Length: 372
Image (cartoon, rainbow, N blue to C red; front, top):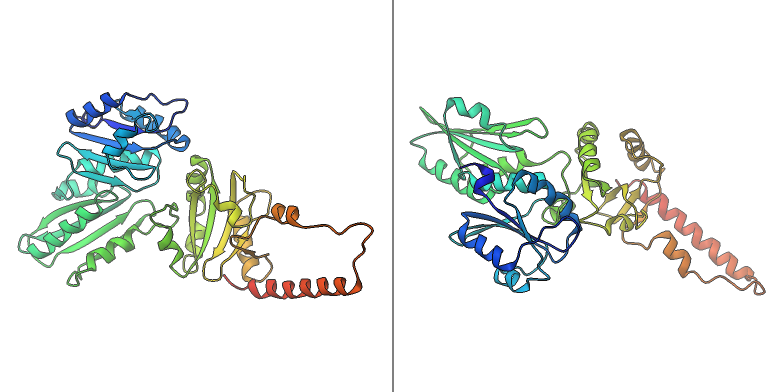
């Protein structure tokens, strides 16, 4: 049975142009009768709508329902917060989708969940399987290495929603594991598998993206690495993908000190203002040092790789203005200021006091500039 025929996708989403919602009864019937169902729950989602139309082109059996019109259905599915995307099997088991809410990620998730957690491979199929996903881990193990095989299967069960896992049998021990990061053209291999967490360490290293997409699931991890973060913000998916490809050489250059990430403003609309950019910006760039709570927003006219490289150089040389993360935007500060009356000139003491404050602020700025 083909992928398109096998899997009906169900998106529970907010009303909006382009959605073709089904009734609650139709959705309940699909959950009972179909072998697999992908359910994306929303009370309102303009962000998912543009991607869902692409999903429908790939999978003609895609369905959607408005959760605000069918709250009982969402309650029965145990959806406590929006958005939530899950793959339900007919036996009642479910798998959560935690990746970026874009068509390519959703369909890749479904493809992974439809195949075995560990795909058996022979010598011929290994070559094609290693290109089957963004991150592909292949174990080469002898029949006698039962413990290693069990550990590898356990790892695959836990991460099958994100990566692909294959197993090929070799004649003699010791076994080895190879891992391919096809997005960045990287390969990692080890035969030192005695430590309990050796396989997971290898997977974590292999799956680490040079320019990852910031998500609710990985944001804490990126903020705790000790590195600065370089954010590219955009509402346009094509621009985010194009930037990911363009910035990779610079990301390699600074990888020891800075992690470059892309941010979908549909998921994080509040972030530009936190880093000193316009609150209604449709695109932007900023460098943040989480350790000291400072950001360096890009103020140039056009965001280019060369301009970003120059900004990083300026920061390291103390020639860029720092922004306290979370401070109100400049326009908000102006509105809050109370102007002195025209007939009430400032006293010399007040003028001197303001000058002193400005001087202190200037000293703090200079001190902050070398914090990358």
